Amino acid sequence: MTGERMIPLLPCSSIDEIADFAGALGFTVTYRQVRPNPYLALRREDIELHYFGIEGFRPENSYGTCLVIAPDPKRLFDAFADGLRFRYGRLPLSGFPRITRPRRRKNADGFTGFSLVDPGGNWIRVTAGQADDDAPPGAPTGRLARALQDAVVLGDSHGDVDQAATRRGPARCWRASTPSTCRSRTGRRRPARSRPWPSSGPRPGISTPATSAPSVRPAGGDQEARRCRSI
Image (cartoon, rainbow, N blue to C red):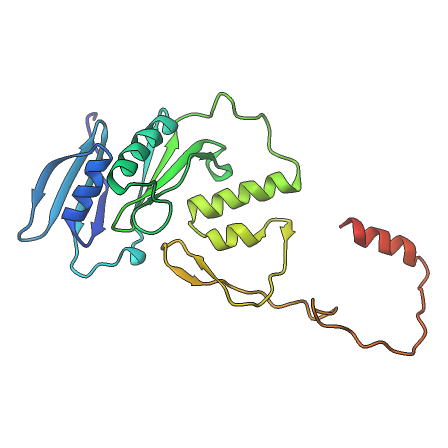
């Protein structure tokens, strides 16, 4: 059979808040009801989204998501961004709602995409239907390039900005246990996760008392030291 359609049904705390947000993106309301249960149907060209209201629902607790395959994600992003700037006076990049910028993602075969997080905390993930014409051939070989690709996946796809910024692939680093804050995938600020220092070796800022024992250089010590410095 042909002609079937599948429409995502996403939770929210207020269908009126969703309708205001969606209107800024160019969606029109095709159906709305308040009783017995809040329900909202939206449409923008070939994109359809339906929402149901839950009293007391919190966006940071939402696992709702859907995928939009677009022929030109960059053009759709520009349209969404213009509407969001007009409605909110700026491009919301944190909290609820928010949007991420288009980037190529290695977990999507290198296709360009971005994510739109609505006021209900649902992730509307937009991806290209085909690879970019200007995409560089082959996979990156440098450690920095691979680390940046991992950071894009964690920051844009998972919303984990803390992990994206501090611990990526082979370029792992130890962070001091000084309390700080960051934004999680929920958009709320939370204490950053700290990692303990390795059990061996002195910690930064802590001097090691000198000893009177003479230093002994093992055989092959110079070669081992050069190898350690190259890691």
